[in-house]
Image (tube, rainbow, N blue to C red):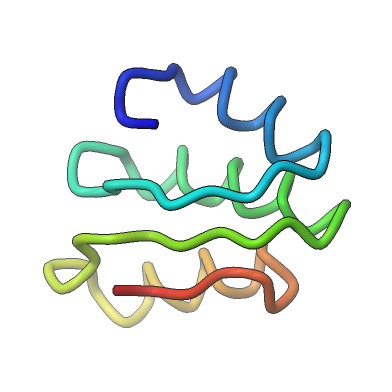
Length: 72
């Protein structure tokens, strides 16, 4: 999914599609948008490469997801 735009990923998640995303090259704001879209349909979202993110970033993403995101 790394070659998809953020808008594409938002559309996929909002439609109910779950996916694993290599998130290192995405901004926190982009990940929040994707996570919020996933929460609407309870789409499973796995974000890989999150070790460098701050706790505050992870909290923002997690809150937007409504519990449907997993961090790797």
